[in-house]
Length: 132
Image 1 (tube, one colour):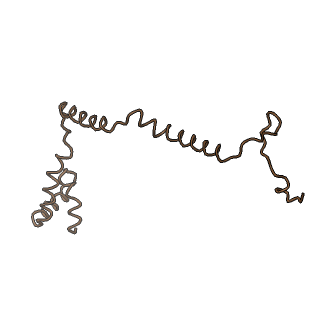
Image 2 (cartoon, one colour):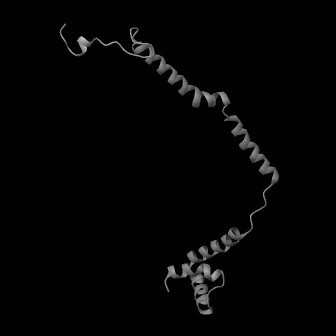
């Protein structure tokens, strides 16, 4: 077996999953290979750290965390006026200004038009280039 094969077997060896002959071969390799011994020691220490139950949360730490988060939320809170001005008032004022500008720019109704008919006076002679 190669050095890499022995490294692949270290975890199984530590867990006692190898048969007797393979376990003896890995143990013999560990006696001669300092790199594999370091790797085995690292795996031996890492296993309990990975599989131990997490510590229970400290209620005081949890409350302090919630207080910190809520203080940031309240500091970043936007007032009702700011929300309305950004979402409702600004577009409404823009539309009102556009309507005002259109009412100034467009010609008014023709006073000679019949009641209820909004008409714009057109100089027919100029429009159709008719000579008088």
